[in-house]
Amino acid sequence: MRCVVQGCPGEMEERRIVHTFVRGRQPLVVEDLPALVCNPSYQLPADRVRPPIRDEDRPKNATRDLRKGSVDWYLRQIEGLYQQWFLTDDFANRHIASIEARLIQ
Image 1: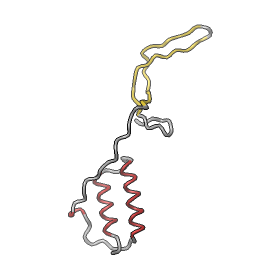
Image 2: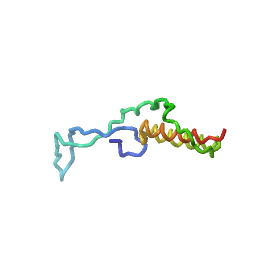
Image 3: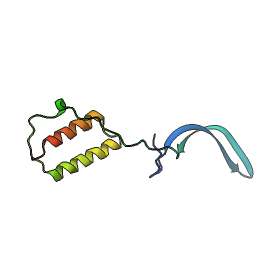
Image 4: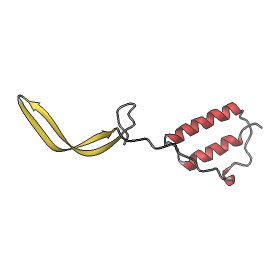
C-alpha cells in the first residue's frame, strides 16, 4: 500500500513498534504494538516498458480521422496512465494500436 502522506513515494508496511507516552506524570511504554509504518527508503520502480504491439493486434479497417497533434495527446495520456500502473500491457497496447490506426496520413 502506498504511503498516505501526499508526495511521499514510500510504501506502507506492517511492523511491530514500541510506543511511549506520559499519562499523568507516569511514563508508559507499550511494546510489540502492531502498526502501519511508512518506509521512505522505498524506491519507485523504473519506467515500465511496454511489449511491442503485434501486427495481428492492429485494427485493419480503422477510420482515419485524427491529426498528429490529437494522436500525440492521446498517446501521452495512455502512456502516463500505463506508467502509473493504472493500465495493463494488453489494454495499453490495444488502445495505442487503435489510436495510431486512426492517424490521417
